[in-house]
Length: 87
Image (tube, one colour):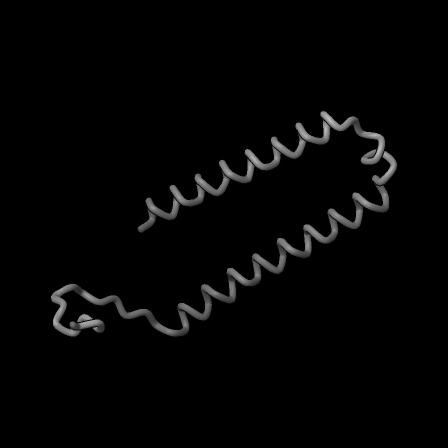
C-alpha cells in the first residue's frame, strides 16, 4: 500500500510558499473586512434603525431575509463558476 503515491506518474505542482502566504493573507483580509462590515451593519440596525426594524411587518422581514439568502447563494455559485473557469 503506497499512501504517499511515490510511484505515481502524475505531475506534481510545486507552489512557492510566498505565493501561498500572500493568497492566505489576502483571503483573511477579505474575511476580516466582511466581519467588520457585518458588525457595523448590525450596530446601525440595532441602534439607528431600531424603531423601523421593530415596526416592520413579519412577512416583510421574511421576504427580505429570503431575498438576501437567495442573493448569497447565487453569488456563491457564480464565484465557484468563475473559479472553475480560471482553473
